[in-house]
Length: 104
Image (cartoon, rainbow, N blue to C red):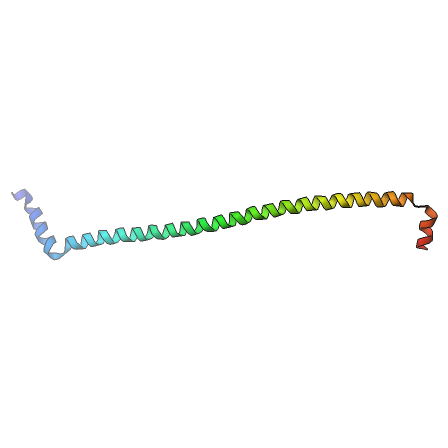
């Protein structure tokens, strides 16, 4: 029985003094703090994920707009090229003395 006397002495000290209650309260408080921390981290992750999706959608829209502008630019360049060739053809077909008279 003397082998367990230290256990009974410990229990006699711990139970009335509130030691067990303090340990239990600490454990519950620690768990709550951990849960609060994890909940806050999850809110941050959700917010970052939402922002990431918004930026990704904006990026896709901008890339599409850029592609449309590039198509429009190529069309304009083709028109300028056609007009340049037409002006050159018209200049070649004008009589040389008419051109000189208009500019003098």
